[in-house]
Length: 314
Image: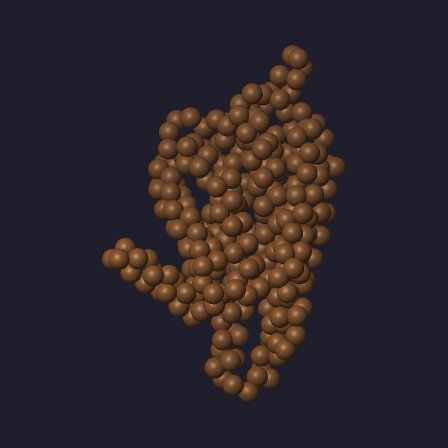
């Protein structure tokens, strides 16, 4: 029991930007505002996609999945970060930290795969419009979505379980805002080469696989869009696809930098800032990216608001 207590402390200290304590309060308010907009924006996307009959298509089914993922993704980390930034207590229980690492990695990997599936959906919609409803039928869409969630879960169980077994030898300081696998691996007091190599190899496969699918899909989409005779239809296809590409860039860019290089090769403060970006800013931006560039979603939001106002008057 003594050895277990020494290897795995009851509490961990989340260091955050300890070199810049004056950042705690501004970060607290920035995170609070971002989290509020994330909740409102993604809940709105889910509601309009479910309640508006004109948005009952595979594209909005996957968009609803993405919004639900983003809600869970941010809720896994942001409340704990707000608690730690808002007061002197920077602790998190060891069990809570490991649970956070499991869930965060599961959801992050799921989103990675889901963005690839969404690119495949756009490819079928633009390049095979006559067969779209047959290829992307509801049952097939549910199967694809379930595959993304399952791949994310299996990967998280593998990576997180390997990480949890690393002894910390009483080390309590985690140089991060929350429990992410690369940060936890650095805390270990034994050789972590196997963990680092496994994380990098699997991350490369899970990032580059969907990313390759996205690039191939959009190269085919670009060729198809330029062949569309109607300027309005070309613009609509461009707006829909460019929204997804922007979301992909915001999510994959930081992920590639953090996970696909050897541990310790990047400045830790930059890694923390990029992690905050893709787990806080990107989920907040996603609903705005999709609504501001999508007439269907904006129209559905207006109809939903009108119905809500009329129901209150009645």
